[in-house]
Image (cartoon, rainbow, N blue to C red):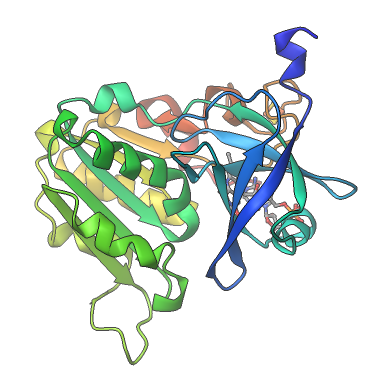
Length: 275
Ligand SMILES: Cc1cc2nc3c(=O)[nH]c(=O)nc-3n(C[C@H](O)[C@H](O)[C@H](O)COP(=O)(O)OP(=O)(O)OC[C@H]3O[C@@H](n4cnc5c(N)ncnc54)[C@H](O)[C@@H]3O)c2cc1C
Ligand code: FES
């Protein structure tokens, strides 16, 4: 079959490991059976559960032995069914799709990640990249916020993030619990604690739309130019490959031209609420 059409047919993927992350969110480590292109940071797959349906999910890791990780929140019918699966079960995967984070553009620059909630998942491959090729990039700042300490994703990896050389790792929660002794407030409150040089930094942002809007405002106030800000957008999708139009934002298809966009490209549509 022609490569172009082959990419539309899901390949079988065995669930090798499942990690319970936070309530309602699990990470699935998948062994793909058959040909599959290694996903780039920021790309997504259409994840198919037989008899239920298909959903776009970002790649949250590719392990050294080739497992592809998807961190999935039970949101509706398909994701609830997937989250109920266990080791040894099978999913279908087609992809990887979309344009990911601009790794080439980060070379020699300071890198700023701003993530909210589950938005850390599509950025985890960038953290891995900075960690692996540390000397390629300048100062690394990772700012992460969640609604409560219980909802902080990948908490078990935080010591690892902290130990990356030349890195500032800042975490905040909206609502602390009794045990929390860290920062309190939305993720943008972390900007006053970080030392960021807007001249030499590229910012990668992912999280709920409202969080991304406040983050962009803050970055613009600091002097970031439109071409120094990248955002990962979420829209309802069907085909995932630019055929059906479900994911359209202005003239762009989020599945094909995104999901990661430079701010200059989508700023006209970014402030308009979805219908
Ligand atoms: C590029 C991309 C990457 C994504 N990455 C992840 C990820 O890494 N992990 C993850 O858990 N989810 C991710 N999502 C969101 C995920 O695709 C939706 O939660 C899923 O499609 C919901 O399907 P469902 O049948 O379970 O629920 P539905 O019954 O279809 O919807 C349940 C709820 O989720 C909302 N919703 C549905 N689809 C979307 C969407 N595309 N964007 C925003 N809200 C939606 C609905 O409005 C509704 O409130 C991503 C979406 C996109 C477009
Ligand atoms: S999901 Fe069909 S065009 Fe994007």
